[in-house]
Length: 355
Image 1 (cartoon, one colour):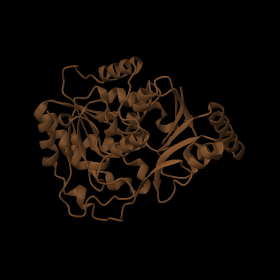
Image 2: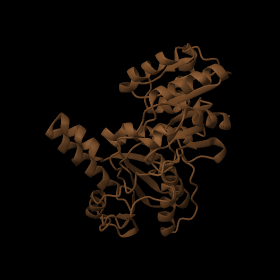
Image 3: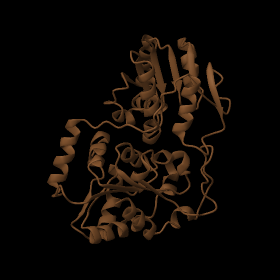
Image 4: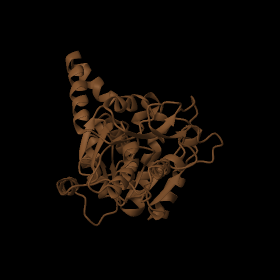
């Protein structure tokens, strides 16, 4: 029996990419206690995961949020988190953060085995490390497989995992019922935004809104489909504008009406998901929903949806400059040629293919 800690303080897609790691660890050490250190915004994705015994919060974002309320609350947050980590007496840590702060903390706590990636010499406090220059040429989950092989863990399945409990399933059924959606209708979800983790550069991940509108309009007319637009609260007005362009009773604006678990449940009801490279896309793929994914600056070979080939179509352009996102950096781009060269026909053809 071992106490194991997995660390990944990043966004939705990054956390979902680690679910194969959790499954492999539980298979190798079935009686182990597995903790997961993440940020609170994505914790809901793991709360029903049987491979996680406890969620822990020690991310920079959580600390900033507490400190914003008051300096005392910030210090209190750090103290409580530190005490909880120390009390669990971890034997092994799998640090997927690519920064040095967490491995320093684990060294200070006396964790004997500290596994992770040595990126830009940030792994000097790891006891076992795989040197990388970034993620390139193969999927992130394959890098995780390589790390676990170094740990002599060979049973690794790369498919992602999102658990939707019965309560959330009932919520999604009721939500669609209240919106007048018949159970037999073709239900298509569209996520026209995403890329929040890129901050001010988020728009460079997003295909033009009016093109999503025209694609939705054609799918409604051809397939008598109902289209659900997905997004967060601050995207609601923009999606309202998209819905006005479509001008149909077969459109639902669900932006801001769900929390993360409800969003997952709603996505699980879809027949097809269409969206930019985003956390929402990876939720759809993890749930086994047929996905049409639009990729521009990012390499889909590295960060693409992890699902069966029959359930996904990645749409990208042949722009010579793509992919330009490398080593976790993206050059300044004013043309967004890689996304703008994706046509509405490209996306509609992808939907027809997957249907």
